[in-house]
Length: 476
Image (cartoon, rainbow, N blue to C red; front, side, top):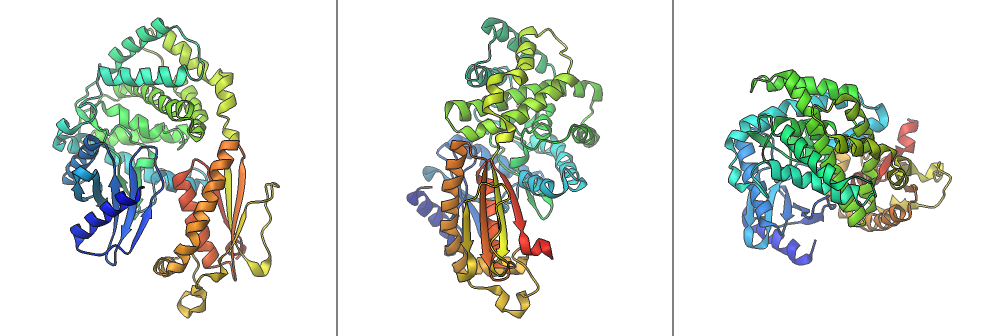
C-alpha cells in the first residue's frame, strides 16, 4: 500500500473518530486488487480499504448496509471518501473460516467442531439470499445486476480461454460453444430472483466469537439459490469430505424451507449443474492468475478442483446432450499437463517451532536443514511478572501484553520480511519445505507468541501448508 494512500486512510480515520492513529498494519494481499490495513487508536481497531474501482466500492458499501438492515453479520461501514477511493469498515479480526478449518484439521481432521461451524454458515445462507435480497438495491450491482445468460457465458469462456487453452486441453471449438449455449439454457430454467453472493467461500467468511460474519460480496447480483451453496461446499482448497457435503446440502434445504417452498429433487438436480459452472469459473480464475499472470501458487488449487470434478461427474447425470463439454470435463483429470504443473504433493510446508534455549535448538525433521532461528530473548519478557507465569503466548492476557509492547512488533516486522522473501523464492523454485524457529528462555511466552503470529501471517498471505509446533508446551 502506497504511503500516500496510508496517509489518506489515517486522515479519514482521525476525521471520522476524532482520535489519533497509534499504529497501522498493512494486511496481506488477497486474491483481488483491493488493499487493506488495520488502523489502531487507544479506543478501537478499524479496517481501512483502498480500491480504485469506485463501482465495486459502491456495491460493497451499499450491500453492507442492506445486509446489516436484514440482521446479517456484515461489517459496518463507518465512512468513505469516494474521490480518494477509500473507506473504513468494522474490524472482524483475522480468523477466516478457511484458517479455522486448516488449524483444526491439522490436529483433529475434519472434526465435528468444523462441521458445526459449517452448519451455522449454511443456516445463514437462505436468510442472506431471500431476506436480505429483499433489501438489496440491484442498481448497484457490478458488473451486471443478474447472473444471467451473458454472465454465464463470460464464466464459461473464461474457463475456455484461460484454463483449457492455456493448459493445452484439446477440444472442438464450435461443438464446445454449442454445448455452452445448451448448458446455459438448462441453468436458466430455475427460479433466479434471489440475492446471489457470487463468491461465497471459506476465505470470505470470518469467525468472530464463534459466529460467522460475511465479507467480499461486492460481486453480488440476482441469481439462483443453488450457486452460492455450490461455491461453499465445493470450495477447492477447503476440501470438504463428500459425506459432509451431502449432510450440509440437506441442512441447507431444511433451513431454506423456512423461507421459501422448495422441491428437493429438482433443487438437487440443478444444484450439481451449478456446481459445474462454479468449478469452471474457478478453474478459469486459477488459469488467469496462474498461467497468464504467472502467479504459480494459484495453480496449487487445481488438483483439489480436479478431485471435486471427478466426484461431481459421478453424481451428476447430464440431463441434456452436452457431448463436447462432458468429454472435455472428463479428460481434465487425465491431462498430463495438469498432473505435471499442479501436483498436490508439491505443496510447500512451513514448519514453525517455538522452543527453550535451555533444551537446545530444534532439529529439522524434513532433513533439508537451513531455515531461520530467531532469538526472542531481547524482547521484554512477561514471564518476569507473577500474573503471567502460569500462562503462555497463546493466552489473551499475554497477547495483550505483547500488543501493548512495541518491542515485539519491532522484532517481528523484519522477521516477516525475511521469511516472506524465502517463501516467495521457495514457491518460485518449487522447494517444498522451510523451517522457522523462535527461541526464548523457557519456550513459553515470547517464542510461542512469535510463532503464532508468523503462522497467522503466512496462512493469510501464501498458499502454503503451515505446521506449528510448540516444543516445550507439547512436552508438558
